[in-house]
Image (tube, rainbow, N blue to C red):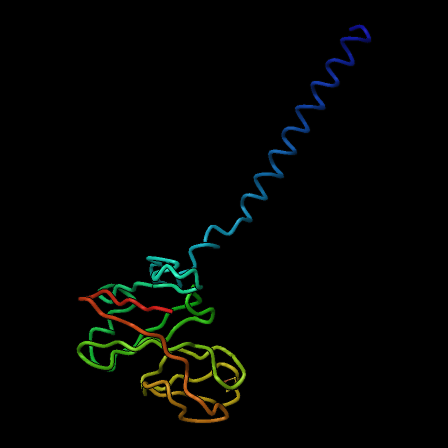
Length: 166
Ligand code: FES
């Protein structure tokens, strides 16, 4: 092998190694991309990021109450919850209040913004902070220190499809 062939072979090997390294790097970067970044539903389906077209940050989220984990909402006083989503970053508490209405409340505690747990079997949503706050099925304060109700969102129900609007 003369000097020219040696340099040529060495460059080819170096390029091959660099290609493998770059491919591996790009693959690892791709693996870190959060595919859910723009589809944050918390268990619902976003139907429109701007339903009234006014360029505000309003959203509609549709939840099928005929499917798990929301089937408890078929019964009056049945409850369910959603995780972080595009309507509320801490998620939502859902309560069937009548045959035609399901209420949606923010899980953001009105005391110091900790996340409120899902409703328990006594119909209480206890704040996860450990401060002692809890809320009833109407979003009202049962135990302080919170002094105001949970934020509520407008909803509509069409068959099994619950639409929550912000
Ligand atoms: S943040 Fe909920 S009781 Fe304090």
